[in-house]
Length: 138
Length: 138
DNA sequence: ATACGATCTCTAGTGACTAGAGGTTCAAGA
DNA sequence: TCTTGAACCTCTAGTCACTAGAGATCGTAT
Ligand SMILES: [Zn+2]
Ligand SMILES: [Zn+2]
Ligand SMILES: [Zn+2]
Ligand SMILES: [Zn+2]
Image 1 (cartoon, rainbow over the protein chains, first blue to last red):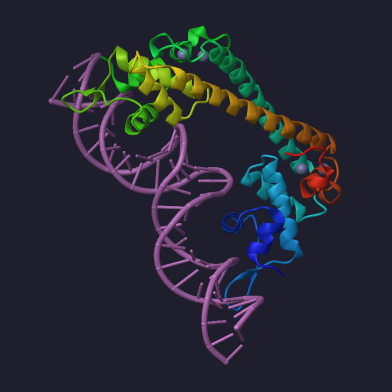
Image 2 (image 1 turned 90 degrees about the vertical axis):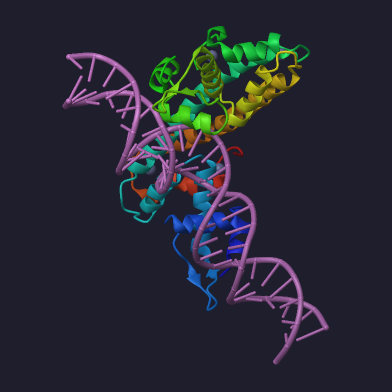
């Protein structure tokens, strides 16, 4: 049995965040002391570790709620779990693709001016004003 | 002189977003008709196009405010503009780096299960529960 | 003159937290 | 046993960059 602060230390999840997870239904409400303070057990720790790891991998709270729901039913098909993971992978890939285009464009823009001039002739500002100077869509 | 709807069509920025930009001080308040409707001119169109392009490149509202402020002073040094662009580039690169690590990890996790089994034995769920199965930090 | 789409302001909601106020509880040392 | 002080409690509000909706007014074409 440990306090919310102890749980926080063990999982690297901040205390208000733990309370937020509980409020949003992701984490079961734990037992309380007579003085109304939360007390967690090993199951709570395991659950929060799962949530933290999934969040670190970019899953949304909603997706994690679906995943933990599945975890509670060991005999159910895991097709939904793989679907959620694939969707997350697709999402990450789409983000990378978009960011890669931005990186190339920003490289060009940054290289175009050394910052020694005056705003009137600045290639950075001119590039931002005119998408036609861009080499790709973004 | 054109209406907010016309400006929206020309810039692909939604009407409520234009009003939001005005409210947050990014866009000057335009003239109004007698009936209190906004009427924009070429300068307003140019300004919003600049904002839109910068947003598309991922600059924050705050950064854009600084950039448009610089634009208004043609004789000032453009060092600040290049700094902002470099910071944005660094930010994008950091995001790509993080997402790339996530992509690799999610690929492994996704490949580990075809979704034909049952949640109890699912590699996807097991991977989410245990960071030690991960091959890198993320 | 009438119809009707466009515009107005204002409030509230999104996701995933974070910060702060003001009050209570726990645990350790004297 | 008493006292301190860190940790805990709830509740509200703020973050970012919008988005959605209500209810009222305006502009323009027929
Ligand atoms: Zn420059
Ligand atoms: Zn561009
Ligand atoms: Zn599986
Ligand atoms: Zn991991």
